[in-house]
Amino acid sequence: MEVSNDPVALATVAPMAPITSQRPVRTDLESSIPKPYMARAMAAPDMEHPDGTPDHQAHGLSVLQQHVAFFDQDNNGIVYPWETYKGLRAIGFGVLFSLIGGLFFNLTFSYPTLPGYIPSLLLPVYIENIHKGKHPSDSGTYDTEGRYMPVNFESMFSKYGKTSQDKLTLRELWNMTEGNRLTFDIVGWILNKFEWGAVYIIAKDEEGYLSKEAMRGLFDGSLFHNLAKENNASMEKKIS
Image (tube, rainbow, N blue to C red):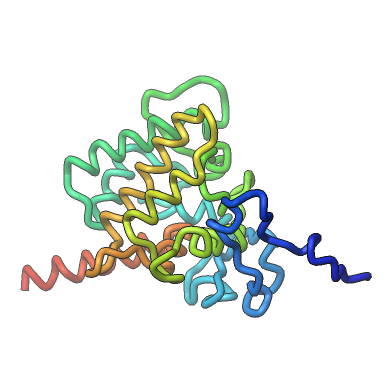
């Protein structure tokens, strides 16, 4: 196979498009991640974890399904509003936010994931069909089938991580959601900011950064399991 040596063909910056230099992309991904452009069905790799999250079990689920599966309290493949509420409480959110967030999540994603066309008043979210709930104006880290795109995950940090390459400030996180906005996609704008805002609140470090590892854990759901363990340990410590 012939390899191109044409500098134009391999350029990641166009002189007449300043935005391409303001939001650069990494060109060294293959030094750590095999085929970073290839969508991963069950693992969420990055430069530091080329095989995905250690000890995190996929159980045959897509990465997007893993993201939602934490909230399936009885493991029946369906997430009801009260399960979303319990999951949000488990990772450390307060009662009011968990009530509103749980209802918002199920109201938004129930109908797109239903196996039929008749709405359900119980607002179930079917994990099998969660890919149908993927909304625009996101980072593109999930593809339309719920697989994980390593190159798009890494691009969030090369494009918007001006303070550091392995974490984002609140301002940088805001800039990322602004940069991903699609024209007239008001619902996507709201969902994107709501989701990342909630993650920032619950997972930011002591210095106010959202780490790359926390963000990667969000995509495969391992962040939720880690936060639940930490929150449970904290509660037990207080009791004792």
